[in-house]
Image (cartoon, rainbow over the protein chains, first blue to last red):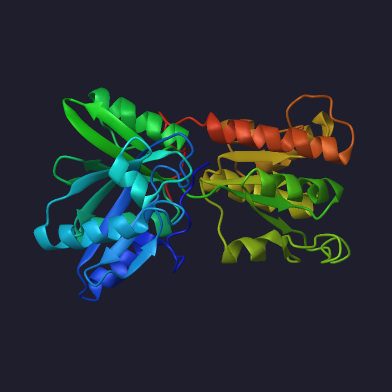
Length: 112
Length: 236
């Protein structure tokens, strides 16, 4: 079962998102919404980002987090959610590097 | 998603209740759904499927692309009795993804040496369960044969709506158990929920084989649990 870890866990991204936002920080949440092939993290995995680029959690094995964080800082500014796609089929994304050969869709939204 | 919705979701998760956060990928709007919520149409079907499978994913419903992020509490297994079967069950349950606890007040059985690396409580179930109550995402297997030890947690498991309740013992032993528990106020419907003799019928003979049969039955109960009728949680 791809069960979520307990919400009481202080490493839990959604718990961290709540704490950060409640503490006055601007926060975006990135979620793996679809995977093809050998994706490192399952659908539903989450990464939490603040406007300074601090982050917690993961959407891949560290391959695309950098790109997601950059987009997330934008999303925090504009408030417009966006769907990102990374994988071998996309030249740009390949440079970012899902070297495992998989493809993932990551949704980035601002926590309002 | 806004902070209020996130707080609601985190509260559900902390309370070990299943919930789905549905996000519209067009605008990021979120909706929280709890298990047993009545939702009709295609959305309702998708929600029920998602709760049953425990898997998150995208779905196209009524022309909208929706993401279902399914938050299901990790399943727990509480074993009453630090017996030979429990020793075999511990590593298997761990591999299958269960968070297993063994409870046995008999300190000769509940030793660190016999259960290295396993969460072990050398206490009466009445006391051990007070600290960590049973719930709908917990399976309970009573393996001592001893009514003084087994009867209380069996009753507690039925009351808590545990997704699986099993008890070791022959048909004769179980018939006597049913009599006692009925006198204790349990209904026939409750008593029928106890799997006894424990385990799938694979003619298991050794403790390790009984552990396999039991774990398989627990997994079956988890994956086939009746969602239409809710989690049979009794009103508190």
